[in-house]
Length: 253
Ligand SMILES: NC(=O)c1ccc[n+]([C@@H]2O[C@H](COP(=O)([O-])OP(=O)(O)OC[C@H]3O[C@@H](n4cnc5c(N)ncnc54)[C@H](O)[C@@H]3O)[C@@H](O)[C@H]2O)c1
Ligand SMILES: C[C@@H](O)[C@H]1CC[C@H]2[C@@H]3CC[C@H]4CC(=O)CC[C@]4(C)[C@H]3CC[C@]12C
Image 1 (cartoon, protein in one colour):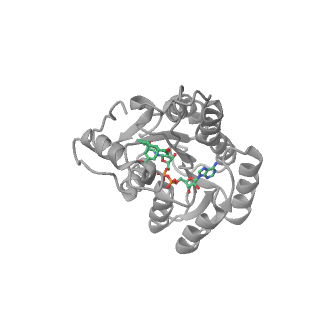
Image 2: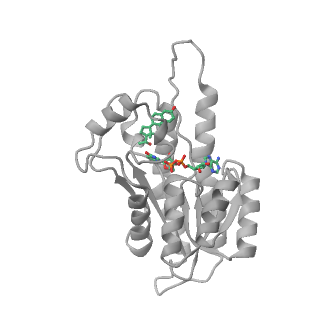
């Protein structure tokens, strides 16, 4: 379902998404790279001979328009990986007494609604495509949560809620889409070296790394991409959330 097929990666302009797009291309896929930062998606797409599409995943019309262009240019993607997301640090009760409801809403819109939107638009196209094998497989959708969905720290109520929603969607989505031969999986990464985690204050990073048993280091984005490959290549992986975290359990803050 990789070599000679089309794949779609959101958040492909940076970090885990960019590594995944590059890895799938190295395995012979033609990759469509969606990102809010179209220039970043274009740089990755240019490197791998893929298609760059600028879209905000939280904007359903933009996602549909990008998908229409993908279908026109490349055809139906059989592998869809949602990496687009934002990290948010927002306390429920900040010291200044302000309300952080806007930050909560923005985080849920991008991380949860955006993931649901891409999954919905992709599933509609994949379900209409020809089956690829004797099982009747038509495609696989891989979403990205975070270990924060279980170990959320102080200041991560919004982020953890958004990732908890992504994780919780996995089983019902896989149950519903099974009849179309579409698998749904979620990866919950621990701390990985990307632009997002670069925003971590050094003391916070050090505290989190103390809670990473082995290997006690930041993950490499290619290690995420290799799990994507494993999921695509193993048809028995469906309806599950896989923590990719070196046995980390994040500390309280
Ligand atoms: N880096 C980590 O430690 C870590 C850990 C666990 C989970 N994650 C998750 O992995 C995913 C990828 O994160 P990353 O570390 O590669 O971060 P990153 O910031 O390097 O990449 C995220 C990409 O998503 C894009 N993006 C953001 N909002 C978007 C939107 N509304 N529409 C389209 N594209 C959008 C950004 O432009 C960026 O290119 C995120 O969902 C993040 O929450 C990251
Ligand atoms: C496991 C990962 O998803 C989270 C673990 C720690 C989080 C970071 C904590 C600091 C935040 C600082 C900020 O204002 C932006 C978001 C953060 C970098 C946040 C991002 C998600 C992780 C890395």
